[in-house]
Length: 111
Length: 115
View 1 (cartoon, rainbow over the protein chains, first blue to last red):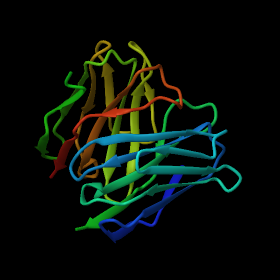
View 2 (cartoon, rainbow over the protein chains, first blue to last red):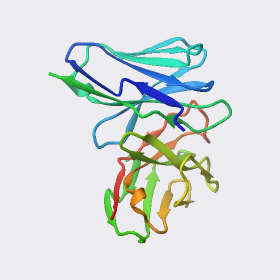
View 3 (cartoon, each protein chain N blue to C red):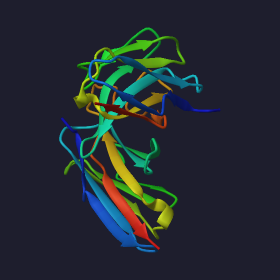
């Protein structure tokens, strides 16, 4: 079963706007990762946030983690057409060494 | 560095045929993974190998076998393909022998259709 579930399933915005995607998970985690997938390509790692961190930044990306609500959000500021992709959260369950990916959010950024 | 490479990129099989998907990485990573991606299902782990000489089942291992040939190569075999195995297959690798802080590096994928 899927550990992480992204919301919304699809998001359409204009260039320059901010995009926010959410991920909810079911069991306690050590870390949560976000990946991006451009159409027809493999996934690319964006950012990792540990369970004892609440917020992390990387360039135009901001990730938050609320372990009490078992949720995370990915914010992309000042979106560009090149940000058009699917975004996945990936979680681990304590004691396991593999990642479980959610179903993803498809982001479309229009010029 | 090529990173993670996969062959073939596309394949069409008839039901009952067999084939092997090849994956290689040149990053000296210890762990390697095979996923399948279906529309609306996200990525699901088929098998993984935390180190050379070891393999473990993932979420959806039925109908597949794997071989960790050496540290660089991890192959996925379909012994008798079924239409339900039509999917995009991704290989990935990570530096350490598993562990939740590992970043996974993905190959470009193999698009498999089983008729």
